[in-house]
Image 1 (cartoon, rainbow, N blue to C red):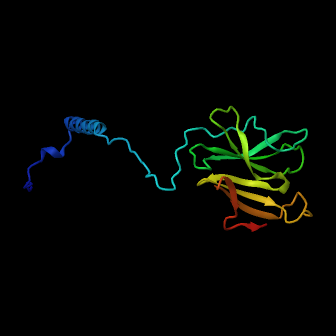
Image 2 (image 1 turned 90 degrees about the horizontal axis):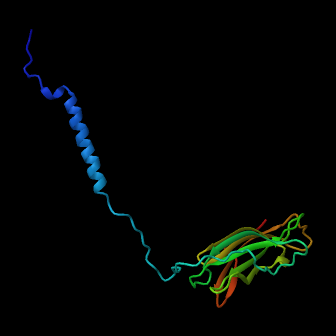
Image 3 (image 1 turned 120 degrees about the horizontal axis):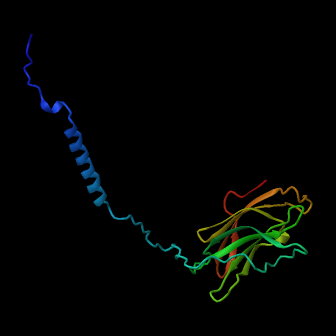
Length: 191
């Protein structure tokens, strides 16, 4: 029989002491890594010329607001709202879509801008963006980049039945020269 030229290597056979040493080394690495953690991440965006100030006040609530909407025996109902600083003063406004809570049919929507003074307990309407007399239904509403964006369903003529609006319009309002100016963004179209 031929003898191996290499002597038996002691480290090729595992013994319990090897497992204890490995576990101890691993525990040391885990403990050390938990002590050497990086600091918390911080992200700051540079304030550019178009940057909005950080609003510290809460946007006005829509409860107990006297909306200029004639609803007869039913109440005015807020169906959508969006919040944001529209005039750049650092205080957010609320934009509310409101209609009469009619038991039947599709009542027309109105869109109002609400603000609240620091010394006031209730918000007040400062602008009407969509008058209910226009017979529009607001399907989407948002405040983005200090502008109010809405999608409106309406009617091409007074002869079009209330059930079936035939015009879809995208609208955008921005605060300019102490008033809201409406523009229609690209992509507005008829139904």
